[in-house]
Image (cartoon, rainbow, N blue to C red; front, side, top):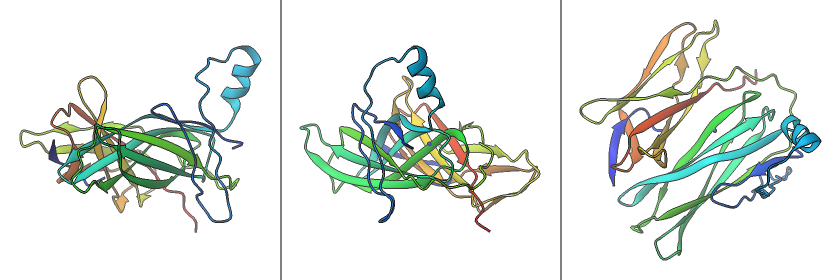
Length: 238
């Protein structure tokens, strides 16, 4: 395990599918409950498939972790379909080789675009335990907001330098400034397995301008082959 320098640290009725074989929800607000539905693991067809495709939903596509000493980065890539201005809570359970639960943590992020992927992750102190497995569970709020969605920003693959530093070249191709941009990063090994990540929060990416994320830290394993940034523009509440 190693700490890899890279970019600034650092994707209802609800249909929610869990990663690592399970899914569960946690309340995003004292007054608003969340709903979590375990994935049935079956392929729908005909009319049922059409109804499922049209329903608002959030699903964990993949999850994983990277560790360096007493710290790990846990992350999940969440696919959102139609849940604008709702809050996703991902709870992570970390286990050692014997299957003992060594830590639990959660991270909350808001969905701002009508559809797309959000990388939701956080750093966790493992108190010296060596993590062997992470389970991720998803719950989403049911506010029913009528706020307008923002445009989804395409993921950006990183470039690693000779010193191990990852950089990500963002481009704001719109006529509006991106303020309080949230960027989740997921790193994978050569087989495509999630092996860590990070996050970044650029305060401003000006309209029509590029922005280079670099010179920070990502927690991942030595087997890291690729890192991808998933930028998300925040909804304005003015």
